[in-house]
Amino acid sequence: MSRPQLKPGSGLLLEALGRHAAQGFELSVFTAHKLTYFLKQLGGPYGKQVRFSGSPRGPLSPAVDAVLRRLNGSYLRTSLEGPDHLSAPLVLDADHRLITERYVREELSALHQKLPGHLDRLLEDYRDEFGLELLSSVHLVRTFFTQKNVAQIVEITRGWMERPVEEVRTHQVAAAVKRLDDFAGLLAFGG
Image (cartoon, rainbow, N blue to C red):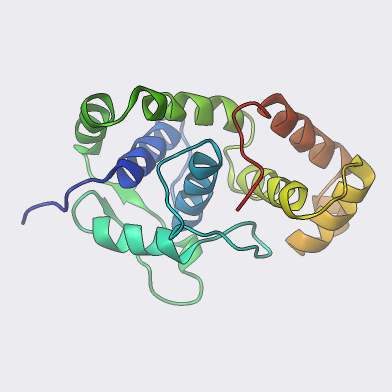
């Protein structure tokens, strides 16, 4: 069975998934959505068809599921069926690393080759499922709402995430705001 040809966006996603797994984190469809979201916000090669919309778990895009369907069985294995498919484990094929590293090095522009490193630094301390949900939700709130004060961002983020107040602490949201501010020169604040 031949593998589908990689495109810049799918190659970057596979590279980001591999780096995430190499740091000891489990992969899921949810993880793929969050990594793609931040790759796009960092200037990744994702066109208008990769649109993210808000959900209680942060930004999601049907286009990410479509990419995973295309890659499923050749570069990775997962289930994309059912209402809880975001929680489905995602397993990368054993040789994905060699293929994606070569693809990124040989096929991507110098600008896009830097994105996995930028993503690694952005997500430091935010790589677990809650961290990805929190950072992406705070980014979404800051992008689409006019509130700039941390107390307002905390209030909107808590409502958005639909989690108990004790799970979304003020200092966590403030730290996410600071992390996003630290990346203001690289990170877009738009859909």
